[in-house]
Image (tube, rainbow, N blue to C red; front, side, top):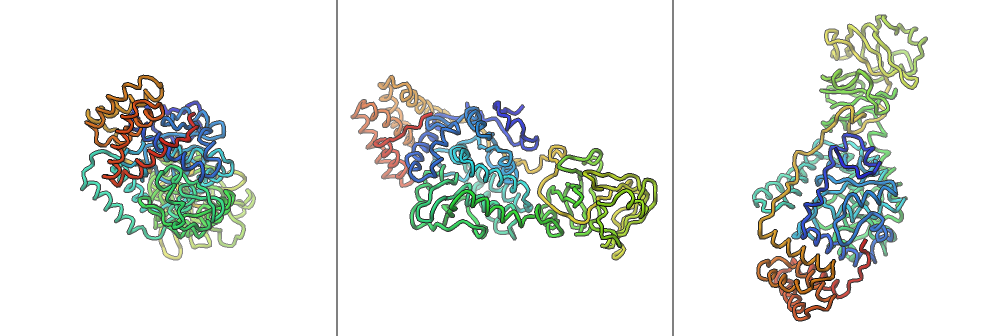
Length: 585
């Protein structure tokens, strides 16, 4: 059973979202993982206290986060539920549509894993540093929380193409490989090449692709305030000790955020070439609403059905009567005749109609769209008397001719109404044909025919109307992040990190740091972060200054010989000299 941490917001999640949630397994975090979290958080706080949008700093505490320890989901939920939110752990990347729907339900998804020490500055894979320290603290700002939730509502309805899911799978696989240990170089190159091939053949961007651009330039990499003096609120910047500093340099263009931002694609593997500044969080809502007005769930019609066909996954078309048809839409349908293939379900108000699930419509569903010839009043609005006038009554044989040329002929077996509108008419011995082309859409030997009623398609959106009843487990990736086993040499290093932490937190047994240092320098050439933590304790407690000096020289030599470590070690030494940290929760 899924752990809901006593948070009713998680308890109310629909079943199809709960399938993405995994246990955090806090015990799997190593002492090195804890040190990575602490280093990143200390560096971020040191810099962000001056450049982050103000609510970020008190928001860390409000979200149940500590600089000293990787957050426990229980503590996060204890705090977040006070402001109407929750947090749940997932396995790395999840599909954008699921990510958005979690947001709509006021749930932050937190990747359970944490970046490797080798990727301490930035990782393209989601990790607990990015998700918790980046997203969670700003949730306490009411206007931003409204934006995030509304973005989730809009995003969960966005249409995507089958190419989008191929790209998602390729990105997910590549991110897993990059954060795994000892991956063969040729396997990594092939994963990168596959992603490049897919991205080179994406075609016109889907609604989800365009919406993801707005999400990237706001939720992930957004700035707020004036163009001359913006503050950081984007989670990607708040959780990246590299980009949070470099992005504020004057050579990175700062552009006003508007709907034109849709024209700027992004690359998750590279530093951002420009950033966008919103004057207020309310402005974000205004731009999002502008885009929502162009989406299939608002527009409907034949063009929106074309997007559903392009998706090649389960979508929902909504008739003007309120009937929702969920299935995989096919080219055999047109704007005047809706057609699905495979398991299809009918619903109203996102609740599946009894007797109209995937079992009853296992081989697809088709129905005309339009008005009857000679009647301007939509059939869905006909009264019992009006139906009787044209011969539609229980047991009667009738032939209905639509203004599109579709003819439905058969014996009326039943009429279904809801909210005062006719949504279905069921026929026995029914034939459905196009009088213009001669195409036959339904034959009597196929069984009863359920004709959807509605003069137009008013909305089309991604996914099933009643996802839980439809049992929509689609789009759950088959790629999983492996739980690796550490070799003995690495476990030995973990014990050194743990011993340093124990001395720092207990403020006792400082003499044990000296043999730790001797062992580290002899056996662990890559232990620069452990050396920094050793130096911090020795200097702050003025213990063994000659050893502290030796460690500092060793670190400076490391920085000089390895350019990739130069800034990391320099920033760590600076923070030891000028800690300024008072945020331990």
